[in-house]
Every structure is written in C-alpha cells, then in structure tokens.
Length: 196
Ligand SMILES: [Zn+2]
Image (cartoon, rainbow, N blue to C red; front, side):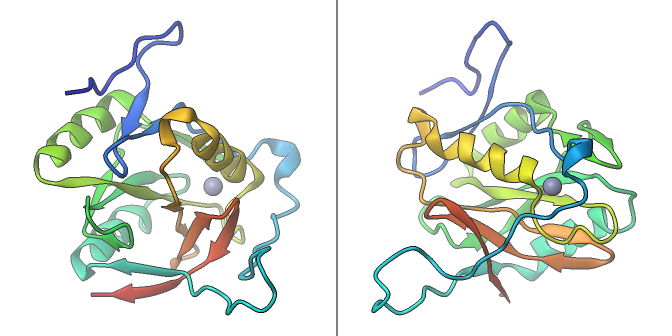
C-alpha cells in the first residue's frame, strides 16, 4: 500500500486518494492582497463542441455532510476549511465532511494542516472513502473561488500523480450561504447542489 506521506525537502505532502491514485496537496494559501478586488470569472460553459449540450455540473451531498460543513464553517470567522469525502466508486457524491481544525486561517487565507488531514484520510480510505474536494469559507462578498484557489486547483490537476483526476469540488461558504463549485475541464464551474 502506498504511503500517505511522501518525503520531500518540504516535508511530508498531503495525498488525498481519488480514483485509487491520489491527489497531492501542498499547503493551501490563497487570496494574496493584490487579488482581493477582483474575483475570477465563473462560467457554466465549456470550450467544447458548440453543438454539444452544456454539461450540468452536479454536486450531490448527503444532508448530514452538508449540515456538518455548514455547522463548522458558518459560525466561525473566515477563513475556515475542511475536506469532503465520498465513496471511491462515485465521484459526484459527498458523504462526509472533515473539518481542518488545526489548519491556519486568516481573514484572507487558509493553510491546510496536512498532517491531521493525512491521518483522517487514512481512516477514510479503510472505509472505502476518498477525497472529493475542499470546502472553505471566504470573507464577506467573496462568493467565488479566488485566483489563489484556482492556481491551487491547476497545480492539483497538473500533478502527474493526479492524471486520472477529472473533477474536484470546491464549494465556498460566504455570508451564511453555501456556494457549490466544481473544477473540471480546466476551469471552475458553478454547480447545482443536490442534497440526498
Ligand atoms: Zn478561497
């Protein structure tokens, strides 16, 4: 079995399993001060054949996972984060939320605590779950993933270890609302949330 940690000069790296291979995550930092004024565009369309029907981006989430995420993120000042888990066999379904209680948050950024998350993911793997995404809170008014969020996702998808990764959820909690997003086909898409 592969180790959850990969030794490097920077120390162990967070690996979240997806499609049996894994998602590598380094430290999660976003919202540099110069980015705050502009939010990145969010498009529902894809650069595919114009004759093809537009894909409908769906995020299915159990009510318990949704409640757990909202209960953790909404009462706390931003930024706060957690990871979203679901069954290995279904990329679209989130069944569990794990708060990153030891991550470092500021009003403008969040850095995942990789050691704690590795431990949680190790437990999840034994239960047939893997990582479907990350949910985090934003300061008031920033309802879409930031340029820092997008850069992070781009790195995630260009990592050779994640060659089979096709999508990754990145919902944003802001001003008491939950905004579902999914990163796929090289860009972020607003998604429809389906509570199950
Ligand atoms: Zn963000």
